[in-house]
Length: 227
View 1: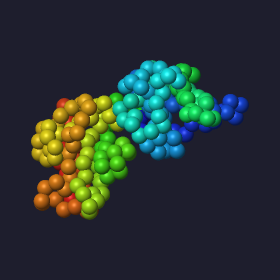
View 2: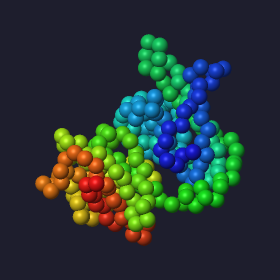
View 3: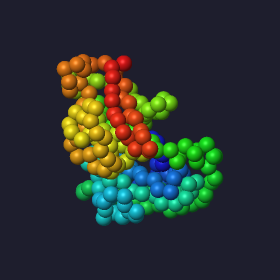
View 4: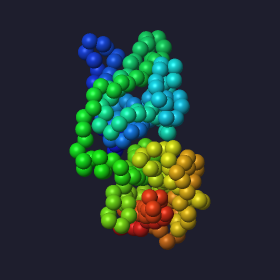
């Protein structure tokens, strides 16, 4: 299911070598996806344009680590099940070519608790602590969204926050560092990031809790503190 940016393994068709398939269920009317080889975000396959509604061999790029924000989009009703197919060709004496396609195969009603959960905004922390590779879902603690991160002893850590894990809907500070400042977005964050360990009062190394406060459905404040 396209909801939490977890990996869903594609299975190779035994009768068609080089063809891989997986089924996924929509939790909302629009869901985005990319394809990652060996669960390594530095080996992404992705479309040549953002929010691509269809794929072809001509516009599938990768595998590499430059596909941030470039994803295919599935459109349907919550509960629709899609079969996603990857076709790989070539590769002997030259680079392989890829084609991505999908089709709706059926509809399965979702439990009401999943329907309610899917309507809630989800926020993901992304940062330098893992090379900007992982999208880490923040959890609601009753007052705000939180995520715990280990700050390295060698350098400060930078981060942004993504709505629904979408790189094109980033929230970021109005200036580098950003502690206590305005929260800007959603959009492409460019180089503006919050920085843990930038001030003299913040020690490098150890665990920090990032806190995201939301007002009227929009992020209003980002703060962090050493645990």
